Length: 322
Ligand SMILES: C[C@@H](Nc1nc2c(c3cc(-c4cn[nH]c4)ccc13)C(=O)N=C/C2=C\CC1CC1)C(C)(C)C
Image (cartoon, rainbow, N blue to C red; front, side, top):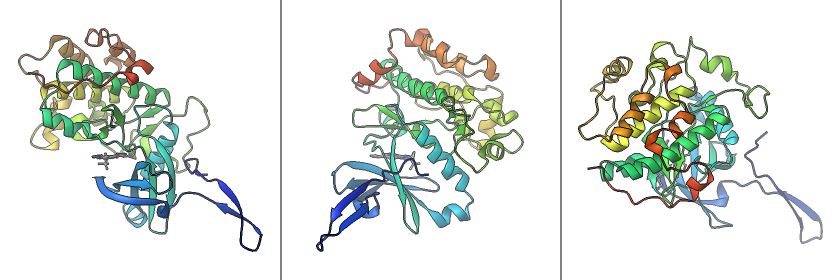
């Protein structure tokens, strides 16, 4: 049941006048592969062009034997189920179809020509308030959509926020997402690998996100919910304006210590409204952290549109916060 597959059937008449039915699910031969765009721990993302339509895509290639050896089948299923759920939002990278050959799995996805937000941030150093407000609003809008579809990303960070050719964002990398029962069809989540109990009950939540953006509740009692993504959101807003994440130490362990003891400070001149927003996101108790709704109404986003309008707005020219 490969819902991502664009399997269609073509009826043709061959030279002897016989009717031939060809299933035209796309395959590797339908694409010409270009350069490597990015490399994950279990995948490589290539630029690829559809030979029929000449449209460019990103194709994520996963090597079957590597996935099996590293016991990552569960993550592959989670990513595919998550991508199949998050189908109609401009701020989420879209999965068009999947196919495989004997060695690999292939996901055909939106191409994000602007690369990773982290790369752009490194070039300018910091973002000014207008840019931070625009990109913060787009990230928040995408988080709201994910949560409305019962998806918790769990590893939000500037590397996983990509930019398309309009310099609008697309969130990516869902291999470590947590799927709640789908609010739209309450059947148990699509995946049969028992990801619900195996993957996320408190005892053996083996997964921890990227150190600098991990929420305190994940480090203390392994309880992960929607507020975990909003902790990461607070870290990202801080980083866009400050040019570095709030919690960063020489080792992961020292970074974790800073997080659970809320040990961070704002650089001089940090904009006051942004400071108030970050302080209300970086709250140790997830129940007391701002929710998406609260953040949208926070004074930092005064005058900022969300929803459809936001995605039709021209991206602001990138300027550093000085
Ligand atoms: C975060 C990811 N990096 C990337 N993942 C994707 C890209 C992508 C593009 C550039 C890029 C484009 N131009 N210049 C750089 C650089 C890194 C990329 C893309 O266009 N479309 C879908 C992607 C991912 C889809 C995934 C959810 C399945 C890692 C490092 C894990 C490979």
